[in-house]
Length: 136
Length: 465
Image (cartoon, rainbow over all chains, first blue to last red; front, side, top):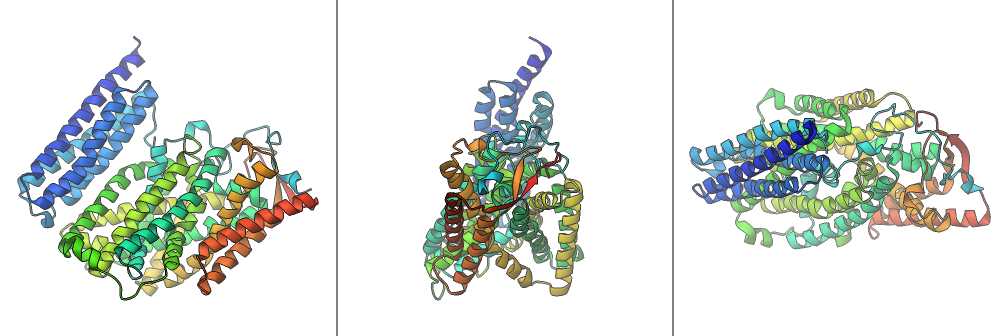
């Protein structure tokens, strides 16, 4: 196996792990919503649900990718959407309307923070390794 | 003979021109620049995600109750979906901008006239309008902050929007990837919040305006909202990796998501009297979130307005490049928005009237494009292969003016304007139908009669100009 193949194979392993991590983080946010108000639960189910669904789909797409290009493209798209949805936690969760204790929206902020950091890091790594453009 | 100047397979230029104007403004898009269907879908969705859509949607609530509104918006958006599908797909097969497509069916000089009406002028106006709109929303969220006054927020908002366009399609699509998903989710969340605070679904279903408008008025209004975007959909559509990618992406975003936005706006207006989504967000304690919501919306839309206008201007003038044109148009639009905010504050009636007037002539351009590419070339010139119906490249010969095309555009525009004054059927559709029939009727009859319908010849230069 040459270095490039090793790099791609390593990337595939890491990216699928990241999508699993994002799936778990968003499910944790939804679970935290169960401890808050009904409004918070609906909010977290909406944001976390979309992000978790996208993570699950991207996990399957990256795992089943046949070549470097397919892998990069599936990863990029999944990471962008996760990054976008993570912003949603920051923009909405602390609002007084949802009236949940800080510990509840704090979990969502942590999940969102993890998602943003992981997404940004892997967006660059996927771009560098696969050559797929950010605007795939 | 009229058909002499029509580019056919084999008449295509030998050499591929260099992309000197940026983003393949005057050349065929190379394969390496093609993007996924999701990418094209998100760019279209980014244009749709705009604060003005809420204001537009709230107008429907003054005409109908929520169920009638649903049928009206669905009907209007289905028309837009079908019309836009055929135009965006032309871009998918030819891989060139709207300007270059019209160069084939309107002629070199004719395409300049068509593009001044379709994108070069209207998109500068809409850039100014949307920039001003951002200022208005910012001032609603932070009424006491100097940096959020309509004039000042228009200035820094306009600069941000110009910066994104400066970096071209790649930056536009990257911005759309990050802003579009969360924007639509937030819109749905705010809709749920306002319904919750205003008596729930029973209150929404019971709400109705004092009197109902004719169904055709609502359909016309809906189609008119996005007619210009429809005709220029090839600018983005040429990037779709499969020829039909952009057509499908266009149809889905219009039929599903434009209906969603209009319904949200209309419902909020029926329940609360206005569709100020950012204001609603600020009122529940999402001040910063509301500001970002508005900023995301205006950036993801206005960067495409500016970019589309640059593609048109650089094609018309044949000088400059993306950087220069986006800076010039962005500066003009931002200053216009600033001056207007300073002089007239909360009213943009003059701009909107002018934009609306040009809007009558925009759909007929699309009708001519569809008639030429999808009917005339395959069934009367025998060009069955969709990828070879239009030829481009150095040395390609074009007519200067295609007379039936220009005539069809003007008569179709006048028909749309006139029927809107006398309230006959659906004015936008009238204009499209008249332009389609006039173009095909004239071009087929003249060709059969052996009468020349194209004047002059223009040979494509090395730059694609």
